[in-house]
Image (cartoon, rainbow, N blue to C red; front, side):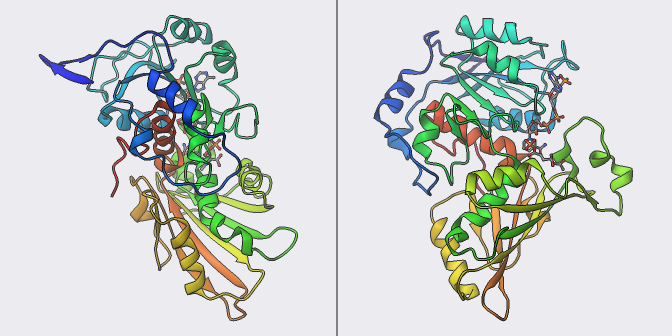
Length: 369
Ligand SMILES: NC(=O)C1=CN([C@@H]2O[C@H](COP(=O)(O)OP(=O)(O)OC[C@H]3O[C@@H](n4cnc5c(N)ncnc54)[C@H](OP(=O)(O)O)[C@@H]3O)[C@@H](O)[C@H]2O)C=CC1
Ligand SMILES: CC(=O)N[C@@H](CCC(=O)OP(=O)(O)O)C(=O)O
């Protein structure tokens, strides 16, 4: 456990071997997962690790890295040991108050060495797409947990699990040592569509997701999508066909998707409006009930009557789904969803996955409001 001594924080020694003993036990007793279905949370009896885990974060300067640091700072069992940034090398990580941490510029080889020396239990990669391959390769078959926030392994069946806890079997995530964290639009879209998939009509593309993201979704590297002058009083359509999240949603839901993204002038938060043809006549009440049943007990998914507003989801940790407007034929529904792209769209979901795979309660350290 973490304990404060004279203004510094000491962490109880733990064996330099990983994974945790609790984890090994967890992995041994969890059944082999199958396909995406809603599964109940593992619950405390399977999430009983109370030994802190040592975390290394690569890509710590970025928006998602910083959002994760803020969460880990409040987490009783997550102990950041290394943060890497080329730009901030040598500077202190002031946002972290549990111990003094200085940014390093870690190469893949240095990451592998720290890992071999048993200094880290979990590596989080918060790097742009296409950059983390050398780090993952350098870690090789290490039994440390690796969570990747980029799109690089979301279609890779050799990776332990795609980490969307509300839709993938939680036991699969808990057993994995390699977890691919879903994209932000893709998280909101899949949660907004999964309950209605069996009732989809229309061919060949069954539904259309119109998405609008705040500009933090485009990361810190300057681009037209995070140019605040260009975005002022403006809405910027981009990647109108073939966006990677179109592929990600289609792949993981198993249904062809049309995804139409836009970028807006606010900083964080995504709004999704989804047009869904139905294969039978349904009422708004029927559909809302299906969603309520599907997400009953889910702490991070809220089903509401009205269409949710992006302003209300900013800095929050869950997804809101509502609207459920059915047209006069009864065979078309419009569902809306909101998600904070940096939280449930990235860092919060990453922490759910870390908690599951490191043996803590899934929601530990996540503000539930
Ligand atoms: N922003 C969002 O809403 C979401 C983002 N994601 C994904 O998460 C990942 C991180 O996104 P985000 O935080 O927005 O990105 P940022 O652009 O804000 O940050 C990228 C980070 O990676 C580092 N970096 C950039 N290029 C390299 C490189 N070639 N080698 C090593 N380090 C590098 C940067 O630090 P430095 O340059 O100092 O080394 C920085 O810390 C991306 O894959 C993104 O697609 C997923 C869901 C939502
Ligand atoms: C506004 C904006 O640019 N958003 C990003 C999505 C962020 C995200 O989830 O990206 P990854 O799938 O790459 O992890 C985009 O459309 O590429």
